[in-house]
Length: 212
Image (cartoon, rainbow, N blue to C red; front, top):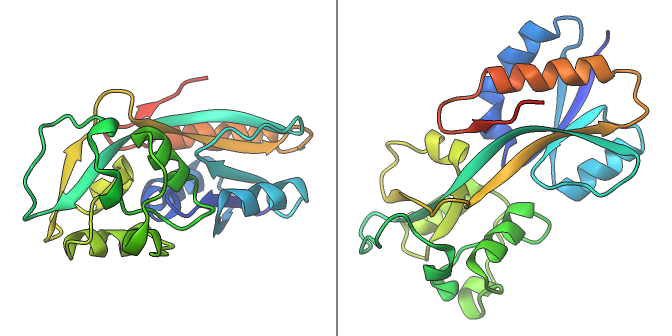
C-alpha cells in the first residue's frame, strides 16, 4: 500500500501514459502511481538510491541489484516529410541516409538505438549541432524538411493525422523492448508483478506483449 513512485523514460512516458494510468489504477487501487519522467541514467540512479520504486526503460540495466520484467516489444518506424520521395517499405536501417538522420540529444537511449539500427555515427554539420530533448520537437523538424527520424510505435500512433509527416514501416527486427525494472530486494515485488501484467493486458494493437 501507499504511492508507487514510477520512473518512465521520456520517449515512452507521454505515449504509454493513456494506457498505463487507468490500468495501474484498476490493478493497484491502494498504490497510486507517482510518475517521474527522465532519462534512463537518472532513473536508474534514483532507483538504486531508493528515490523510485520502479522504472520503465528500453534498455537492460546490467546491475546485480536490479530485477527486470519484460513488458513489450515496440517496432520502430521511419518518419519522413510528407513531400519527400517515398522509399520502398519496409525500410532497412542501412538504407537510411546518415546525414539526414535527426536524433535526440545525448543521454536518450533512443538516440543510441537509432544509431545502432542504422549502423552509423551522429551526422556532422548542421544536423550534428541540433539538440532536441523530445520526439515532438524532432517531429516538427521532420515536417519542416530538416531530415528524417526513427520513432517508436506508440509515438507514431499518437501522431496519426498530423500534417506534414508520413510513417513508413521498418524491416522486421527493428524494435526496442520496454522493461519494468526494480530493486531485487524490494518488499513490493507483488505490486511490481501486478503492474507489469496490467500494462501487458492493456496495450494497443501493434505491440508485442511479453509474457512471463
